[in-house]
Length: 531
Image: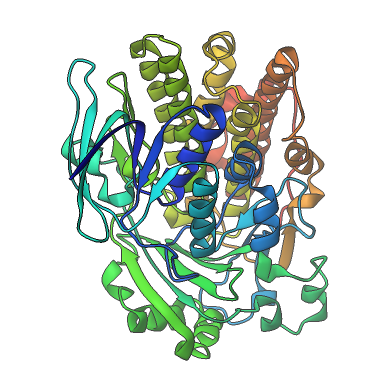
């Protein structure tokens, strides 16, 4: 048995844990960091872990904060944005409404092959001097009391036992949730949905599903396959995500009450379910049945957590803490947010600062972001097949994300208590607007006419929307950031008013008078022309 003491021991060397180790090393080169990972490296490409799609915060975090841009650009796929087809029961994608961009927006995001990426992260961690130990089983751990060090007992691939002391114990163990389960921190968040997924060792070229020349010419370049493609219907969406290894990730995410997991919890059941709901995808999968790499499912995948960061020098990140929903791919965003707060706490500790107040502040902010994002999903799946309402909800959800949370992350102001205090009225207004808009979308859905015209709703044709994306990387000083946030909240207020006007025109008098206070909004961002 060997006994050693370290500044930080990270339980789990997947995406969350290795990214945390790299961020800690970058900010505090003097730290002695150990990462303990159960799986042996190298990992298999493609058939490894789900969670391949990244969005703007995660892409920025990986590329800029961690300095991994060259690897992302050379070893993974630059994403052609999110794309949605309202194709329930339809074999011809050209015959339904499509939501997406005709050209890639300026701020990059990526499709990650998790096996390739996590192998790279492990090698990069070692290259940067991090003690990354794969093939290690954590047997037990003890949390230190009254400022004492934590203790971790583990065994390596050869069965040798080790005891590690740790000033910081950081749980990135994924759904195993070692600390969360030990401390009974898991909380029900009220969101009931299931997911199944599988990987096929072949490219699914969605661009070849239709030979309609008009449909083919709507995108430049004509590479829809690079998008995170969503095939949507009432209560569900199916994903198509390409991987750099040449494989394709396919998944179904569904409201648990509308599409029970028992209808799709094996490959054969999932294939039959797709045959009813997404026949074009079912045909593509059937033609590649012999290339099946894996199949898995999560029942009731979404959960919250009572604590994330402690002044006793422990913290949770990634799925070891809380998980929302795969729609909009927020998982790696919240890894970035949690890891950033953990690094701030470690920095304060290195400076001899008390941790109680900042740990409480960071936790309050983290869960504020979590609850605001949860509102995008909870109870919303019934409208996912609505080609009139969901495209407008997507525009709202993007604007809320780009306008507020992305600004705080890109400008490195997640922990700026003075900024949050000064802008409290505006930030609270934005949060309140989002909390009001989400149930409004459901009421509109109940009254809408279900139109699903043959059309592409091109997000690039909304100038304000494309501009929000293009300016995410602007370098802003303090005054400019405050002005930007205030402008974005005013834009959200105007966007809410525009959406309500659209819904009233579509749903008739039943929605008239709702959210009437929005009439004072100064801005009125344009939306797609009504069908």
